[in-house]
Amino acid sequence: MTAAVARVDIPSAEFAARRAKAIAGARAQGLAGLVVCGRGGGALDRYADLMYLTNHYSPFPFIPDLAGEWTGRAHSFLLLPCAGDPVLIVDVPYVEPIALPAVQIVMTDLVVEGVCAALRTTGLAKGRIGLVGEDIVPVSMYRALQSAAPAAEWIGADHILAAARAIKSPAEITRLRAAARVGSRMIEAMMAAAVPGATHGDVVAAGLQVLVPAGGMLYNSFMASGTGGAQPTFVRASFPTWSSSTPLANGQWLRVGISGVLDDYYFDVSRSRAIGPATKEQIGTFEAAIAVVEAGIAALRPGVTAGDVATAGLRKQQSLGFPLNGVFSGLGHGIGLGWDSPWLVPEETMPLVPGMVLNFERTLTRDGYLGDFEETVLLTEHGVERLTDAQVRLW
Image 1 (cartoon, one colour):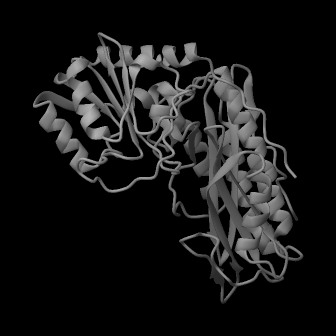
Image 2 (image 1 turned 180 degrees about the vertical axis):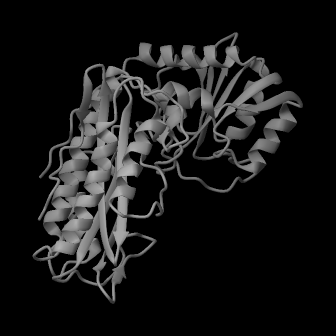
């Protein structure tokens, strides 16, 4: 049985410094403050900004509002005025880990009403207010905020937190190292379970035997298997991604991409293998995916742009004769409390600096064969540190 991974605490002072940096960013853009929304409820894709500033996550599931009883369940809001103390509105009484004084925390079932009241008490009911989490706030909730603060001008401000979160602190890097190690052990267990007769679900179940005892949570597992050649076949499912009942068979290829969370921070890794002895065609596609990722990593150093790195990898892909298409056009992304900046696409001009943790990924297909490879690395002053350490080649 896998033991739970020891948690590395992030001190309250670091959260306070993050809030101060966010305020400075808001002030520089002429904003009176920020309203930051986070959504929990067991989902892993909308909690990052609020967690980054407060160390809070609501486990309560999202449910429709019931007037007079509850509103905004699963949502939390941090009101961060440029002048004055912050106020955090939460919907659960689990406030012990929150990195704010208790007097700055409001617990209520009526989250929307609580936010509307706090807009007035914090002075954020007028002026230019930055909204962080535009893709999280339901339209009905946004209308309520507009009604409560008719003199406010709401300005999209996600970019302020995106810039701050792009560079990781030493404590964050420690957590990302641990997450990458658990993800690596998980995908190795899945690859070992990929034998003739096993289903995609069997493969995922083997990985969960590693992840769950370690204290981690699965975001998703992108599964596909099949055969190449003149009459290629593909086996995959959408919801859940491991629900295909077709068993693996000798002669097939398998790709597995997994993402999940350990102690709030993400891991993201993928590998490919043959079922049974690998063929020349299978190996060629597997190796091409590795080569593209490695070309991007080889171009990584302080001072280059995210676009420079993406271009290096994609040029390698073209040189190997693979078209530049697929379900994800980039070469990767930052990784932390979520899918972070910078995005590794040719047009991105953000300079890469030490402290950034980047995820390089590429899925390639040709003639019905598929190769998938994904690595997480830390950019340091001296070069690149690999955080992913899963076995690379299984052929």
